[in-house]
Amino acid sequence: MKEDKTRDRENPLVSICCLTYNHESFIRDALDGFLNQKTSFPFEIVIYDDASTDRTPDIIREYVRRFPGRFRPLLNVENQYSKGITNPSGAFNFPRARGKYIAMCEGDDYWTDPDKLQRQIDYLENHPDCTLCIHRARVLTVDGSRSDKWVRPYRRSRRISPEEIIDKSRGYATASMVFPARLVEEIPSYYTDCPVGDIPLHLMAAVQGYGYYMDRSMSVYRVGVASSWTTQGKTGDYAEKQRKYCEEMKLTYQTFDKATDRRFHEAVKSAAKRIWYLTKVNTRCYGVVTDKKYRNYFRELTWRTRFYICLELRFPKLYGWLAELAHRERRKKG
Image 1 (tube, rainbow, N blue to C red):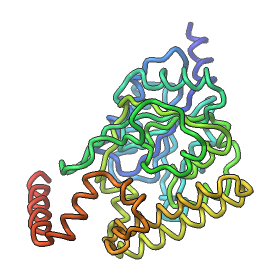
Image 2 (image 1 turned 90 degrees about the horizontal axis):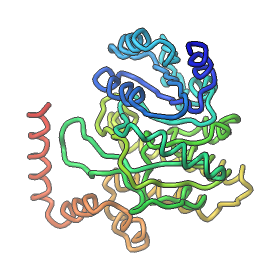
Image 3 (image 1 turned 60 degrees about the vertical axis):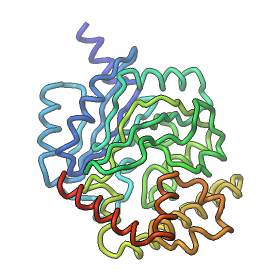
Image 4 (image 1 turned 45 degrees about the vertical axis):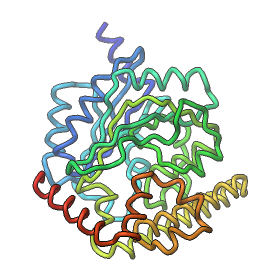
């Protein structure tokens, strides 16, 4: 029996790939979510820490000791993101993954359904042309502030065409993503040069097949984590960071368009335009945001975002008072 278990660890069907950086307050939720999975197949937990300065590496070492053979950690002593490696999954996790499938989850998010992996792998095994399986996720704000309740790109379980994966009106929760490992056997330049890791993975999936969405909440997406890419992006010259992000994403889409011989050109063009539009939303360029030329993108915004934009435009004093009140409440909770 011991030999069979060892063989399973060496030949896992799924590689759970996890990135961590200063996730001391959250990493236990992520690791417990992995260990709580009930599956009919073996899986491995491939984890990379990008030189955290808090106790995250110590907690990972603790779990490695408590659950021998379940984790394959790589704890770096020098931060690689600051050296320009913006997609560490491709550099440090995917090359070590031994599974037929890869499941994604960053260290500040976590899985809530013990049957998550089994459900997604069952679908992928029965539909070999499917290259990306995702699901609904619950949103949890670190500071307790109000936010959209779900990451829910679609209103029912359904198949997603390649064009929809590229030109989607709502984002996909990273912790919901499961895909065949063959997608990342060769990493294209539009992945390594992209400022974020999830969008180029979506593009890679679209090239080779279609997606499937499960309208079932099976993970939590944390918003407002201090070490996250989104939160870090809001520090310093935010407008300049948004401009640079927009330019980098435009280049990503252009490179993808060229690599695929313009097969998805219209979807690519729309997706890049949406990124540009969202940077205008983020930087409060409301003259552009509310322009009738971009009505289709405005309608894609959540009702909460549309409400606050209209409130700020029509009743700026009331908006300012509510914003200050919300800020005080967050400070009390913090």
